[in-house]
Length: 326
Image (cartoon, rainbow, N blue to C red):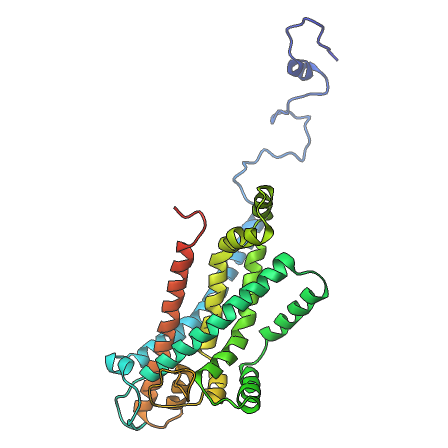
């Protein structure tokens, strides 16, 4: 092998090229490996093209199977609910209106649903986010494992069980009356595990490099969590909160058990029975009269619109508070 002498102008790369250990591969060389193919890189085997076609078709079919029921529900609710969905329906209650009579509205039910969902959210969100922060940032040992197990059990808790729990504890044991706040407590139990689990997963997605950079600057852990970790995970946390709100706003069983039903407007969720959209829809849909059935469809359309507006508002808030937004 040729070795470069001292003072030689030949570079080491040129010496290696002249050595017997280096031989450029020539596509036209007959002595090269027979398994070598000079096929262009953009060519794909027929089997792979077929597998890719089947995979894309399967994904498209799965998408259609998921979208078709949702689209059919929307079309059915909109087509039937639009008949009675008007200003009179939104701004009037069912007080002094018989189920067989046309007219009437769901103002009392809309007001009750918004107040009950707001109270449940105000209770569940701080507790859920703090529990998620504990599990991700501080939780170690048997206590963290116990909390995780309890949250997993609560994720599959039937709504009627939450209603029975509040009925037996808040109303029968403590002696309180049926009210919108009692319904909020039952809805909070259903919403809490969703907030905890979604917030926990979003906090886990925050890169550890952000925490380490904050610690390197001498920032305490609690301030790092509040000023770095939580704002970074805020869009995902808000999405999880809205999923919980969407779930509790459509619950009927706990509302019927602990809130009661009324056709009058009750603006105080802490005193007396209060209307709600799920109970309103259930009551109107079980009537044999066509005006009542039309009001039930209009109530379902109203509930969908409220959830959609709340989701859009939450997405806008998450975008506005997104870290790094110019």
